[in-house]
Length: 233
Length: 238
Image (cartoon, rainbow over all chains, first blue to last red; front, side):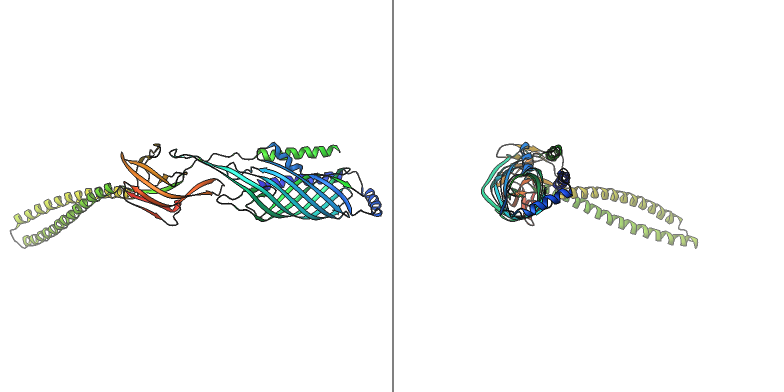
């Protein structure tokens, strides 16, 4: 099911990206003219500062399964090098988690990283970046098992683990298209690689805010974002 | 922003809503930890063994009688041949010959009757052997198991050879009364509990290291390989 989700989302994004390139309304000759003008303008050291919002996560607000918010900031140096940071807060109640526990993990996370920007056209950018991420979170649940024979009491066993942390790294490729002035829409394709997290017994942490499910040491992820950039060139 | 942008964003909204709407609903978990119990009806088995021994003795006696009758029949047949030869050589032995023929007919009739009885006993012996095998397999009808601590009982309709004793998820032991053929047997067990998640991520209570604290059953014991519940059998006789 999760692979199917990724496939659907990726197909849609590729469509979106192609569409965005179509409706920029700039043909190749115009593009060359703009690029020539830009070539003659000196690019400041801090060439752009931007705010990002992960709007894909906002869809989860309509569901019981999760609640996620994520904001980011991005600074571009010489229109090539990127310093970025992201902060998020999530409450996860993933389907497929320990089924009879009403499992939930909740907490905040941040990512910081460095990247490199490639101007594909005047309206489309491509980024490659690496990020370090850390989450501080707690998880909780109530083990609920009914006695099938009916001669013993049902088991209702609440648990809560607080002060947990996790660290991971991410390799990311991002693509974005300008929608209007400094407003961009794009996506991050990430590979999250777990470094360490506080493992628990007897039931291990199932999901970490910002990372996802713990049973894989690396997880691909897809994020959709809107960005507004204050560009100085 | 152009109209296409709104269309694409609307499409995303539908796409994500559709994917999340397909999430599966959880089902409630209803199960007890279980441990196998093997119940041998030793009293009945002992009675059946006595019957089997008796039938075996009867069959052995029949075998001796049949063997003797066959020997006698062979001897009479030899006598008949001698008498027939003598008569052929002019001997006046017709009366003796007729007597031997009558004796041989009587003996064969008796032999047929004994062999029929032997066959009947053999059938009965096989039936009792089947009964013994059924008892040895542990086939028992437990009519009820009662949790002594709260008086609640679970009832069973059919006989089975593979009984699973329900265990308490909240305690490290059980104290139950097991009813078999209107006889009540007490069994108190202790065990260790652990919380585990199975391959479907359903959390269950695992049990291990069983001991019998006290029981009304005879010759009770616990056998295990790794001593997890799945590899453990409580053995009792009654």
